[in-house]
Amino acid sequence: MGSSSFFRFNALIMRGIKRYGPFTLILWMCAAGVLAQPTDEFRPASGTEFIEWVTDAYGSDDLLVSGSIYIPSSPLIDRHPFFEREEWFNGTVYVEGRRFDRQEISYDLTTKKMILNAVFKEGATVRIVLNSWKMDSLYLDDHLFINNKHLALGEQDTAFYELIHRNGFTFVSGYHKEYIRKYSASTPHGLWSQQASRHYIHTGQWYPVYSTKSLLAFFPSGKDQIRRFLHKNHIRYRKATSSQIKLLLDYCSQFYPSAE
Image (cartoon, rainbow, N blue to C red; front, side, top):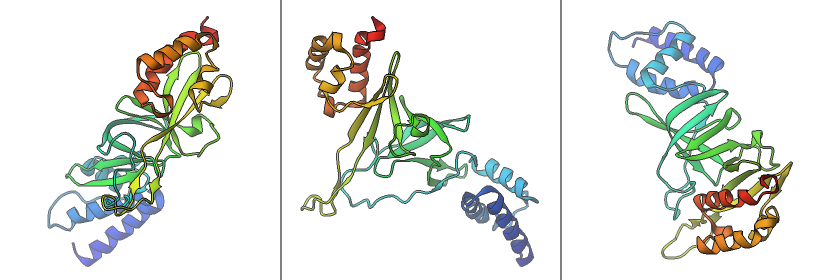
């Protein structure tokens, strides 16, 4: 690319950044690597045409990929900071009314951010922090997470909560991890805590459900049956997994007052 072409292309990029946001710069870095080669391929002539060209070449969508670059924690820290597992989930993301299927997503519980593994058509990948203010909800496999802006729990505005039950009452779970400064021969750089949960039930307004006792208060006619169910299925409420909580709430729902 000659110097005059380079400056024209650079000016085009700057107009793109001004109009479409800083993520355009990332796309420019990818595109520049291709355009620097001596080919006869198409050269975009306008800012809009440039975005369309990059989208076609790299398979990204500016509505979905509109966050910042994800800077991971030190890999030397023992365990991992993500929801459930370190591997990517197969995700479906809903952003401002649009649906994006077959996305690779992780939920960093230490930052409360959803991370997209943006895979471009040429094979390059970039980890992006999805824009929480734009997202409505998303699936991580069969886990449905809802943006707190639609729940108004009074917690962190951009946190996401898993929808556990919605039939007569609504029950959601929030998850978190934290860094533990516990240094030893096996964990010289510290470690991430085990995944912990916070549960909330909505029966006209939101209530925290801290323990088995506080859960039973919402199902007064089924207290004994629910206790037996917990024992039979080896469920410890405070340490229950997402699947165990779903199983428990499905059982509890028959004892909710409005179901009588």
